[in-house]
Length: 287
Image (cartoon, rainbow, N blue to C red; front, side, top):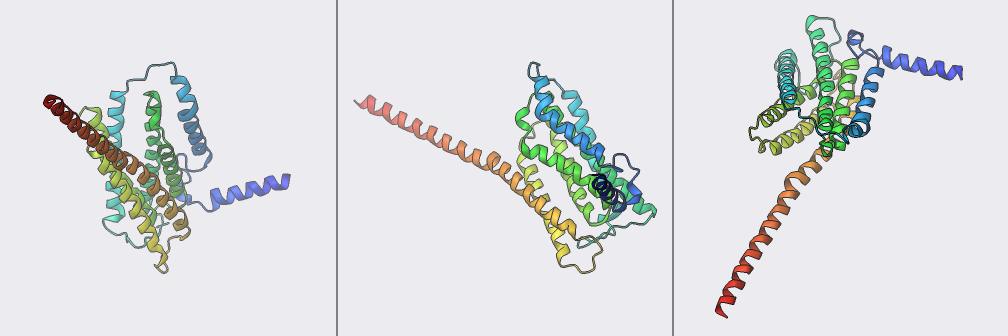
């Protein structure tokens, strides 16, 4: 038994320390996976169990001002990280076909690691969105898609910060912060009673395009020789983003195509019934 425990500790140490980038090991919540896993475990427990139980006999919280501040912070931070991603690489030096991680200690390489860590922190901040759903008793919005996406983004951004802080993988953050800047602008305007309902459909379309571009970005690595960026990431990112296309595509179909078709059918029936009623009235008058 003792040998099994020692073997487990050795494997954990190898994965957590030997394979990790030493430049990010002292960043908050990056040194060990345990704090992040504990936080995600509590998050899932709260949004599915503890939160609904606490709110079952309470009136929903009115969080309009808090939500406005939260949305404004999200806009500012996402826009800032998007700008940093462009300025540090994607607008200047990075190759869209293949960009290896710069593991040096140059000022620019360190700034990239810090920007990735900031991106991880904002993914933690994203979890508050679900907490607000529960406190406002909007449990129907706590869907599998919503929770899976938030948990996956926290885990993915943690792994990238710890093992691959830079290079090819940062393209995802570039796209994601751009999409989130627009998305939280919509949320902020909605909370201010400004009608932006027409944005919803296009934001979902933008998210679908985002996942498709990420897939294409990683598929490129299959034909680039001597890239310097680890190929095993392709086996994670391509299926993951394809799965997100399936989930978001299903949401888009049910929300914007199926419902619209149902509304058209109801409208057509109503119109037909109205015409039939008018015909019946005219026939009654003739008789």
